Length: 415
Image 1 (cartoon, rainbow, N blue to C red):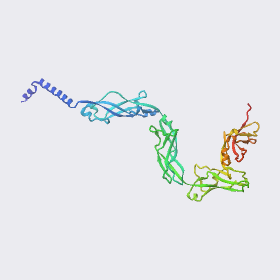
Image 2 (spheres, one colour):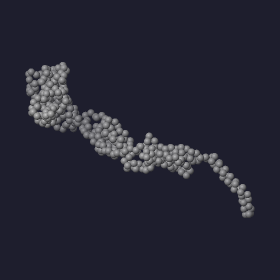
Image 3 (tube, one colour):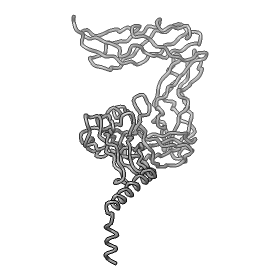
Image 4 (cartoon, rainbow, N blue to C red):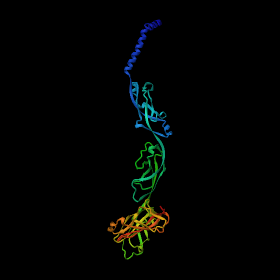
């Protein structure tokens, strides 16, 4: 029996081997017809590694034209390739391999079916532009935005931190002129603190794009404190008796009212700011005039002027039927009298603004080039910013008020 089996296996062995080979080839043909190889193109986003190599060299990179993808061809059997997607591949650009400061070779690798696919050998590149890296520190300006509630004033605005460090392309960092952290106060009636994103502006006040910058902090804590306010009128008291030849028209102040701040209890006690009678003595008047006073010493206890409110107040005393105005007198219209020998005197301004009084018609007809004045320099000595009195001769129906000016006195040189 055994011999029959051996004879059956060895009989016509050549034909049998050929049959096996033919069957294998037929199988290959069938398989390739049913599951042929195919080639497709895939596109993947490039991942950049070892960026710190550039940072350590004081450089930054910018992907040229914003193209950070590469396309490549993949060959595999249809049954495999139909299962593939761009996520099955990695595209890596290593900054250690930067060439000519402009391109980085991209390595394509398969994450799936690596042993069953073939990736085209064509070399892909990621193209970049290099920029100088710089770091600067900027002081943060704490501000408020929005609408302030009535009878409130912002007392203080602070931020933490007060300085921000910015790192990025030199051409962008150099554009930064100011950094602002602004808190919105609309509808807010009590002290508060909030975190805000600082904004960067150039010298023209336009926003700077910070997408390529690294900041030491992403948000800034802004604290805002409020204080109660009240608007009060300014009242002028007088002393003495006006000359019978004169008739008082009006006494006005500029501004006519000021804003004060303080606790509600203190503000409730204040109805006006009074300038005492010692300032205006009617007995000394010979006509209309103006003067300036500092009202800070006249404020009641517990209140003070709101921020941005000047303590200087102008008082205009005008006679009946007269009005007050100003005129700018050019320096060449001012005579310097009594200059001491060996000295030279010059005005510190090209024009002097002076107060004038008269009827509206007379003031409208007055021309600056016709106004002449003089300074008595006899008591001056060498020095800058010295005070002197500028005096004028009045026109019929017009009073030009003498005023204080500053002059510079130097030793004269003989040419």
